Length: 265
Image (cartoon, rainbow, N blue to C red; front, side, top):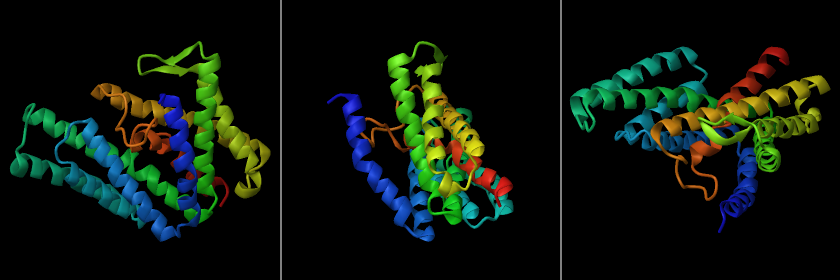
């Protein structure tokens, strides 16, 4: 079965299920769902970086997610510092399972821990924050990113000639980026009555989300290329792993929530 066919079938099967979870789960259970995704995505990140202490880092990142869920940002900042210290002490004096040298192993673990606490935990918790504002906002983000991906793939495949970042993601093109912006803008424009945005605001937010979604994808691609792999895992046929599916939310969910919090509340 071709990769495109796998991608379409997996999307058709999982898409309605994910939307259903986003729509029907009450806020508390919705956060628990996001916390599970946070943990699994962190485990993928440790696999990419070949870090052995997967469970430890997964739990440390999960605790940081809980501090964000409780909106205790001071403790979240302190926890980032404490979690790095905890990992460092356990790695240096308890586990001592160095393969490529103490410095490389410690550095990889600390980097994965820090990046996961910032670029996995924060964006996913912002889904919960959006859910507290409106039941529709997380679904709008979800659909805008899906539309962005579909338009980016379609335009990039049919019209793509100008490479966007060939040294990071060779298949991405400027035409695909324009498709991504178009897809997300169409979704945001079509949900004006749900968001309360003006026509001009919807265009600006749609463009920003399209650009940021692609930026998150390129950010994760940079990490994978640095580690010499193509997909974060083979969990979702045709789509890769969880990290490959949530990378577009790295910048979009914090952006949308903070835009609404600053300008609409």
